[in-house]
Every structure is written in C-alpha cells, then in structure tokens.
Length: 80
Image (cartoon, rainbow, N blue to C red; front, side, top):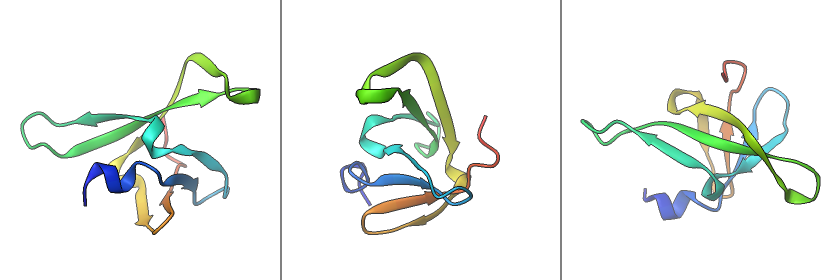
C-alpha cells in the first residue's frame, strides 16, 4: 500500500470513537535504516480548524488495529 492510498483516511480512536484527524495532515516518523513507519504525529486543531501551536498527538504504528476503505482504527490508550 502506498502512502497516497492512506493519506485521505480518517483516524478513529477505537476506545472513544472520536475522530483524531486525517492521515494526510500528519507527519511521519520513519526508521532511516529499515524504511518502516514508526509513528504518525497529528497536529491538534481548535474550533474553526485553526491549528494549535505546538500541540500534537503521536500514534505508534503498533497502535493501528485496522486499515479500512475510508478510515484507520487506532487504539490510543497508550498515546504519549
């Protein structure tokens, strides 16, 4: 699967059912030696879509439970 195929998918929290963001709005942390994705960094937004400065959530690849047609389900009880 290419990143372009993932980029428009919504990230949904399995625990709360809340929308975390759209994958295309995230930054990726990639292991330089293996090329594998380590985590996604998601900026937090305020009301009206304005980005909060320096407020981010990090989702590790191991927290992804399911990649569907329109969304990615993640278990965020371990997000730091």
